[in-house]
Every structure is written in structure tokens, then in C-alpha cells.
Amino acid sequence: MTAWQVRAVLLPDGDVVEAGITGTGGWTSVRPVRAEPLPGRFVVPGLVDAHCHLSLGHDGRGEPVGLGVEAASANLAAARAVGVTAVRDTGSPGSVTLRLVAGGDGGELLVCGRFLAPEGRYYPSLYEPVPAEDLVAAALAEVAAGARWVKLVGDFQVMQGAYRPPTAPVPTYPIGDVRRLVDAVHAAGARVAAHSTTAHVKSLIDAGIDSVEHGTGLDEDDLADLGARGGAWTPTLCAFTAAAPPADDPEQRERYLRARERLGWLLPAAADLGVTIMTGSDVVGTVAREVALLAEFGLAPTAALAAASTAARRFLGLAGLTDGQPVDLVTYHDDPRDDPEVLARPAAVMVRGVRIR
Image (tube, rainbow, N blue to C red):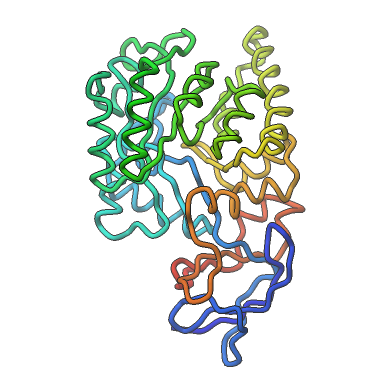
């Protein structure tokens, strides 16, 4: 393979690096003499999408539908092509994305396997219900099959038919069962990501979950507890803003605007309280747009970019740029701290030491 020279500003911190990539795809802090210059003036050690669903799409009415392993693989390839070298897939129908890991296409792919929710508490076409008495066994089966995370639906609407009714979400499992789940998954060497949009998140954090997904019901005390436990929050702002109600519904519109205002002070508070904030595109967004929204909702540009790179990588246990290790990185001609949309226009992408762009 080709060796590469890297002379660029290392983001998000802004240090200038003169280093390179060896002919075998490993990082070297000593700049190779006989090597091609890698294009781009700014470099990030691989973007992270910490909440996505590679095997989900939408039907014509905006409801999620399951996709097969070929579509999931294509979605993973598309993410890598724009510099998203690390993906945490937070749930797939029938554990489809576990087949990508089993097939050797994992790379920096972390998967949760199936959605864990009881009867009538998630989208019917996307999951097989798990009764409370089977919750621990179902989670451990996913871990045994290769899942490094499990996805708990912590609160959700009570479903009626194919589409959710206009009722508020409520807790799905007794909190004692959630505690047993968390303890068992941790003992097996994996972690728990929990979907939550209500104040029930307080009990979920107390039960020991590792990351809060969505988290619109969080308050400052919850964030303090989550930060003290070393936990993370993936706010999925693309999904939140995509769900804005129409202007002709003033009551829903007012609730949405209040929620926006609340997120505007919760996100900076979370950063101050030591919570790891991570970018997550869900099914409707992009990492570039998520970084832009994090900045719009109050994070400093450097912190917003860290949520899509170094901070998320550390929390997820993914390698940085380490001598001798296969390289995952992405470069840019312009500074994404000035304009996050630059993240959608990489100059070069390296995945496991191989340049794919």
C-alpha cells in the first residue's frame, strides 16, 4: 500500500501534527520521508455516529421499516465514505447488524442487536417482544452473539396497531428488572444504552445504564448523576428537530419551543458536569448536521466536534491515532469548527489504514 505524509491541524484541539501512515496502514508519529502527501489541512481521528440504525428506513408515512443485511452493509459503506469510520448501531430488527460483525465487516462497528421492549411498547414491525422475566436472558443472548452494547427501550408509548397513539410515553419494565439487566450485561463485559424521553430517565440512571439515548426528560440532577457515573448522552438533535410540529398546532408548537429552550441550557450543563456528549444521526440525520445542531444548542464548536470524534471515541473504547495501529481518520480542506457542514465534504478518508477517498 501507499505510505502517506500527514501535515495538518489535529482537531478538535488544534495542534499541528507532522506524522504519517506507513505502507502497512499504521500510524507513525515520525513523518515518512518517501510518501505521498495526504490532502487536507485539518484532520480528525475518524468521525463517530454513536446512535444510528443501519437496518432501518422509513415508509411513505414516516414510520420506520426494517431493512435487510445488504441494505445495512450499504448504509455502513456510505457512512464510511463521508468519514464516519466508527458506528454504534443502537438496535436492529432481528439483530441484523450482528450479521455484519459475524461476517467480518465490523471494523469500528459496535452493535446492540435486537430492541429490548415488552409487548406493545415499540414499533411492532421492528422487534419481537421480550417479557420482563426473559429480559436478562434476551440481553445476554445478544452479547453472546457479538453485541458489545444492548439496547433497552426504557420508556415508550403504549402502541395500538401499527402506529403509536397520541399518548405520553411511560416506563416499559419494572426498575428492578432493569437493574438485573444492567448488572448481568456489565458482568458479561458489555454496556447498556437506554431509549428515554421522560423523567423515568432518573430511575434508569440510578439503575446503572451507561448511555441515555434522546434524553429529552433529563434534568440537571440527572446529568450530575450521569456524569458522576462516567455516563454519556446522545441527544439525537436531528431526530428532535425533525419532529417539529406544524405551525397550525399552537399547543404542540409551544411544547416544542419550550423543549428547545430547555435543551439549550441542558447541553452546556451536561458538558460542565462531565457527561460525555455524543453525536447520533438516528434514522433521519447526519453527523455533520448533528455537530451543527450541538453548536446551535449551546456547545462550544470544539466541544461539538469532540462529540463526533475524540470524546465519543474515548467513551466507546475506540483507538485514537496510535503508533503502529491501523489508522482511521478523515481530513478536510477547511476548518469544520468554523462551519460544521465542512464535515460532509472530506478531502480524504482512511479506514483501517486503507484510503477509501
